[in-house]
Length: 262
Length: 109
Figure (cartoon, rainbow over the protein chains, first blue to last red):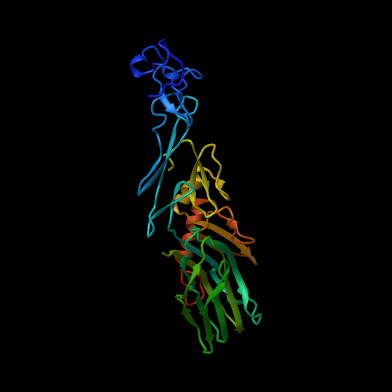
């Protein structure tokens, strides 16, 4: 052991046997005088020399396993205590959860939306709904949005447009009409979907046609983080109208559902 | 319904999802604070019902799921939200249980 400070008596015979009267601070790389030790302190390495410090000050460290990362901050003192945090590591592949900015977040998303508009409520004569011969006319318009919340994964969705329960009571001949449900998609995806039904009455005498519905589906993909704007339209073209005919309850629907892909 | 944390702020995020944020913490971008009743409706997936008058006739609409409760939700011009629970039930029943006209033009059954 090398002792670099003068100590004791006896000239140059500095040996371990004669260090009983020395302080540990007399060692060249130890300093216990600049900061006096407190009860319970041990020597800790400050990067250049050994100084007094709290127990464990040099042993609390972070670590990493295959499933988590432990981080330690702070100096372990009363004024600067240790703060230990842990992030879960998510392996590659199909996980239900992901870690983003140190927080658990869902990795996969599923969502569904149903939007319905009743353009004709109750029993209404055709010519009160649309002026005969005026061409294809909007009866109702409704808007909303649908999102893929995932920042990383595309979302595969199915869009369904349907026309439901447009019931016609025709008490005089000579009716020709087409009714529509149209869905227009803009934003992250540009597309449109449409269903229609055509009614043509050339017979004499009263009749009733009860339309139970028409549906069409269309699949597409919303890119990561994408939002689409949906516009639901109910429309009618009353081509010919010669007398008494009613329409009872006309519903236009869209449904969209889907989830993120792998 | 939210009894997990009394210090939580109830909110709806920009995607229309019910969220809670610790009191004093900032809301996520696009989120807005909502009351307990609204938050409960969002969690339950409740629909929003609207009416619109066109040429003296009333039209109905209903939106459910997706971004129905998002702060940016806008059904379009002229639609007025129905808040009376009994009226909401009546409209939903009518929209989902359409009547038939009779053969003499006497109106719905």
